[in-house]
Length: 448
Image 1: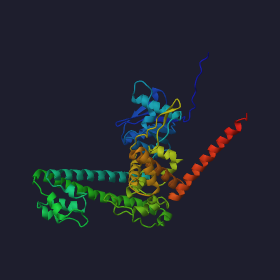
Image 2: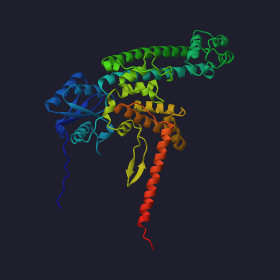
Image 3: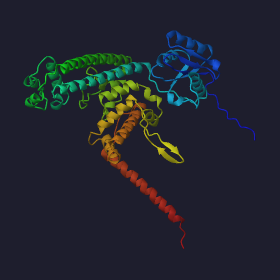
Image 4: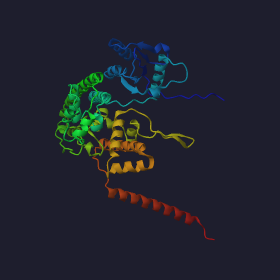
């Protein structure tokens, strides 16, 4: 028998592949070793790389998203006439054999030429600016949390059990007492007088908890941690001002967005990490062209701010249906089927910040009562546990978000009566199908 050859159609004839590195980049424009070149990471090297691609009539480039080393090169290629796509490293795993940078870039070039690579989602430049600030703000909040935990630890070592009598040691009562302790006050009765009126514990109980052992080493560390906490809080306020400036600048560019107004949401809780100088309810309503995201139960200010910074205004249009959106968020089960059997249906792991925000919103929904989403959460939790219910509700939230932003429609959950009507209709349809099947079987039975 003659040997049969399998030919694959070339989708991108003038394609190049780039293997990103921390010290150098390897670029392949063909499948010959002579068509591979190594470039440095300086600005001049990047310009030489771009010139070499243009001289060789390269039209499209695929590059891996390795750490943060790809960003400068990606921005330089985007400003040129070359079409560039960013790909996940797990989709470019090389064939079995020796692994080198030269072979990696050639393998990326081959896959891209055959059209076997798909680009990752990247927001627009304006959203990238906002994303940088919001992520930086999240890192600052984590720093304050660490400083608060260390303050609590050192106070315990000083026998000051402020964490027992106060819910939050960096709240109004806690910060007043810690400031006085750092200023040298050791009398528990005097410290207890700083109690805020909303504090549940009495002055007598607070005074009993604040009998110090006067360890000066722990006191010194406490002062340092308090100073760090206060400094980072000041940085968070400055970051909030910059975020507000960026959002106002974006909204003021569109007179239609600027003219939109919405009533305040007095029922939405404002905690200590909420931006104090930004009316996120109004800005989010203007940002998404009149879509009220706060109508969704469980959505907080942090959830909406994360959505604006990670997805952007028009980012949802990149996903053609809700299934693609939930899959990108790693909220949909990854079914592995072999031999007609489902071997695994685990939800893939992922550190998408929007996914984390939706899971936090889903967890908050689980604490609500008599709402459409909380009833859904409780039904899942009763059958499979709270952890599964959080994932399922987060996926439902993602589906609701896609419908609202992609189809430009408001959130309108069904009432309890509408839900019961839908349930009855489904039961009636199932009974009608069963009756039809029975009639079909009876018609086939011939009389004796």
